[in-house]
Image (cartoon, rainbow, N blue to C red; front, side):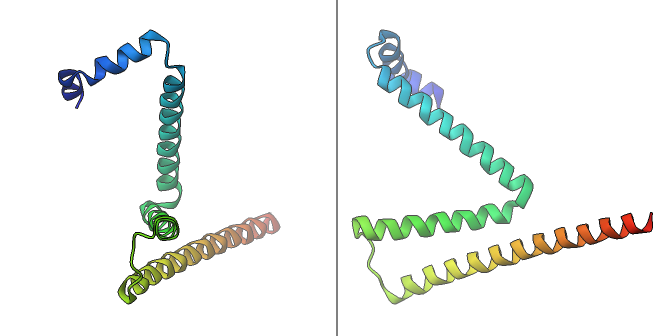
Length: 124
């Protein structure tokens, strides 16, 4: 990819703009964009480590649902057919059920851990 940008000259165009110092807004936007990309990558990594890859899939489904609804509301680019509404409803329902079961399982595990800790304290 870097070879293509060097070959086409896009890299050197960007380098000339940055080195001229006239486009400080562009430099700031590039820095902010790169920072957000780094933060999002770290959040995804943390999410996969803590919650697992399925949770990442579910959040991706929620994100797609939100983008779909925003796209319909703002751009009116999707026709609301019955099959579309059923598909969106199934996605939303499945993601919600998974999230509920995951949260209740985590709460149950925390409750059991507390009970075990109390039982150990009483035994000592």
